[in-house]
Length: 393
Image 1 (tube, rainbow, N blue to C red):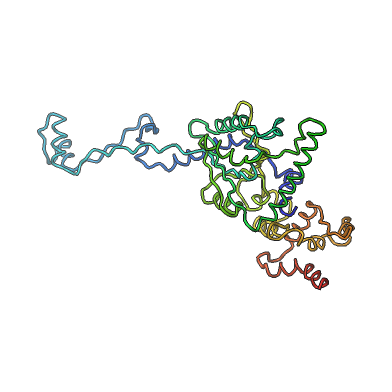
Image 2: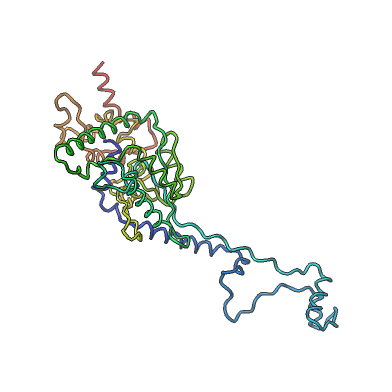
């Protein structure tokens, strides 16, 4: 499983780090905070704009300063005194003193600030964008049902008054060479699930279980077309999808990421929401999901968030597979561990359970004196593998 098993560990082993949230309520809260912050930064002239709050009752409006010659006509000093008509008096002083001009027109009111902006990873959120499990999905793609769900989702997010939730969806556009083996394993697992589905339908003639749900073919292209129809911003990665999603998230100032992938959780994203738990109420007033509090996860694991990268690398990923780290993981457990007898079975290397590996690796990372010294960490991690290579030679 490697780092991909960390997502399941979050949901099952860290109950205090998973909290339910309503994205629509959060969007309205963010919009109010932005409006209050904008109101505090308004210039003095903006207070006279239409719709801006006026001066307090009983306070005199501020007048532009008058030149000394104009003051003389009212105080009896030097200056013109025989001007009886108020309009003629003001016109005369306007000609005599070109520096006196009426105040400039107030600037237009600033446009309303948008609400919260959430980036959606289509690579892991595709089943939810499809609408989730449906009884007839095994008969083929349900285009009308998908359009109905996406239409209701977009209408719920488009809250009037600028307090809505803006969804931006990013689709995977390419498969990096480093992830080719991972893609092959995923395709093999989907093929086995498809065989189970065909056998179940042929033998029992009933819809397959919910756990066997497989998205229809070409679903990514169909969802993309539907989102464009509903004027949702759609983007596409070019090479490494995970890195480009994180870079796009940070460069454009999104408020949260909606996905279901362990790598995003360990990328130290400020607000990470679960796409699998996304639910839209029947009246469209609530859009609920789960938020993962990574600070609480780090506290339960005894880690610092700055050490998440080395922790993720030692769990195993597409660059450093967990098969290459199996000897290191077993060395962390020790020979006295109850699972040590499973280390070698039928002359095949057996990997420890994912939750056991996560706890053991977290304890190891927390005990490292200098996590930034990767050379020392690498020598300590791969000493078991080097011994195996020497024995094979």
